[in-house]
Image (tube, rainbow, N blue to C red; front, side, top):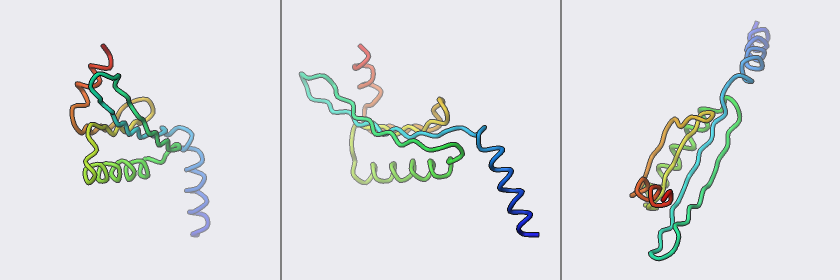
Length: 102
């Protein structure tokens, strides 16, 4: 009975998994030196389809580490597919992005 239940759940996972979204976490640090162009350093952590729980854990770990070390200005963004699900900004990130755009 347990083998049958395990086989059914494995089959269900193999059918559903291709339709689940991919996750991606982007950690960006901005280096601002007066008189020089603003430099953005991105670290990208991709996750496979259906790994939403692992992506949430990684997002939480990056937030905790960033709060402890106080890396300012920086941002952490979690994407589900192409849509931003969560975002945290440390320091004047929005103003820096406006300066970079102009």
